[in-house]
Amino acid sequence: MRLRKMQGKLKVEHSILDGVRSFLERLLVANPDIRSVIPGVIRPVRDARGKISVRVTVPTTNGWKAIALSDGARQELFISTALSRPELEQAIQAASEDAR
Image 1: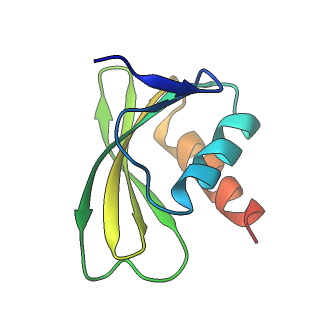
Image 2: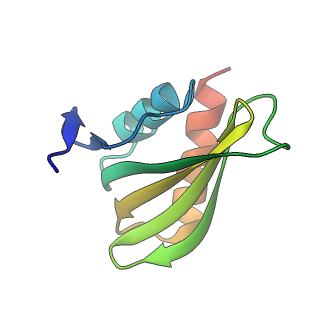
């Protein structure tokens, strides 16, 4: 399956939750150390209301897995980067604040 690319770094294989796409674009523009972001599976959850929240969960072979919560659903995000967990969490926090 070929991946559709946006700006060469945001690889879209699945649909993306509302608001998460613009968050990811801000994150990628502000952080050249992030090689790519691949949004994954979307699943409904009850506690995903209000503004978008993203939390880093586990390391992967080439970066980190994160979970984005928005619009009553959660979406997996696979982030390819050499950043450490604290550096990535700080970048995510900065991208979240830019939305305000």
